[in-house]
Amino acid sequence: EDFTKPDRVVVGVRRAEVGELLRELYTPFLRTEHPFLVMSPESAEMTKYVANALLSTKISFINEVANICERLDADINDVRRGIGHDSRIGFAFLFPGVGYGGSCFPKDVRALAHLAKQNGVEPRILKCVDEVNTRQKDVLLGKIVRHFGDDLAGRTIAVWGLAFKPRTDDIREAPALVLIDGLLARGAKLVVHDPEAMENVRAKYGDRLVYSDTPPAALADADALAIVTEWSEFRNPDFDAMRAAMKTPIIFDGRNLYALHQMQQARFTYYSIGRAVVGG
Image (cartoon, rainbow, N blue to C red; front, side, top):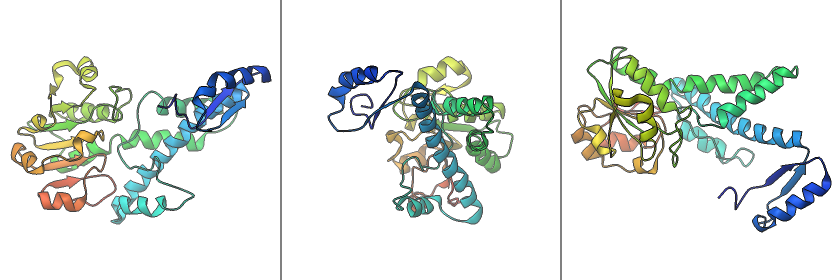
């Protein structure tokens, strides 16, 4: 989709005639009149880094605001709607959660910061973006530890979502790995499910985890459920069946999949990001 219907095509060239040749090659994919941008190789490389760094900045910014909202009894979903309807801001990439991962955003933020330092520019914002994201990956673990205590021996935690984002099996720098490591270190038994990333996680953790073929099966006798990746399969579960399967109906939602009133009606204890705790 990105290749056949791009927002824009950016090419870096040294000679104008090379740019024209590339324009001809890309013509079949430019029928939507999205721009074809010709610039120097240096500018093209910077464009790639800066685009990913800016998107990462938006994610870290909304996550930091979400953490502030929790302390002030504000609701990040309301705040997000309030700012998103400002045409200068919009909604894209302003979703609170447990941080970004994958192969592009972390690498490009750090690479741009490194380039800046190499060339005598102190990358203050870029460093903060990376630091905020690193801390945000611990937020869900912190909520679990504050609820149950630091010793989780004898506790069973179900984990829904292992990939760094939906519709991929990529677990590189995935927030779920930080959560898993923290829970295992505290003695918890983990039963995990992901629609696509199970084999990659199995290759990393082996028999230290229990692997569930379906989301409902992961909940059997669980003391709590942690949701780390916003797969569509997790958005409309049978809450009555979930309550019946779990030892205690507690959800730690790192992606704010459910409405607070929905959790109240379903009689769950519900922790999310940047919102009030339900039933806690």
